[in-house]
Image 1 (tube, rainbow, N blue to C red):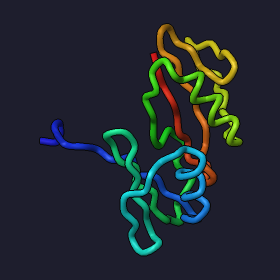
Image 2: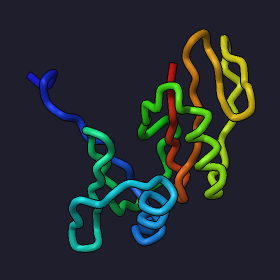
Image 3: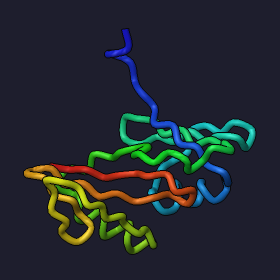
Image 4: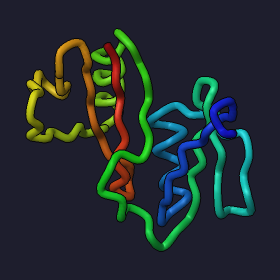
Length: 125
């Protein structure tokens, strides 16, 4: 039923203006639709990211959205770090942390947070 439909990452924020600054200026996402100052939809590759105002922003303790960056993971980390993004480090079984990258076999993952504390990640192989 849904296997051939597009999915959208949906991220709750408390302050839409601060979120827009982060998602547009820091991450480089382009807005494609805005809903009366309550939500902004962004294009990200062939996907969409919806950022919306909610009193429950930042309460998710799991990854809210992921970007597949392939072999460019180190370059993307470096570019985001230059814009002030701080990467998270987690103690996870079966992984080795190299700088800001968690390595598990051929998979590389890096986590960071938006201004509301939503957990976002980059991954590549």
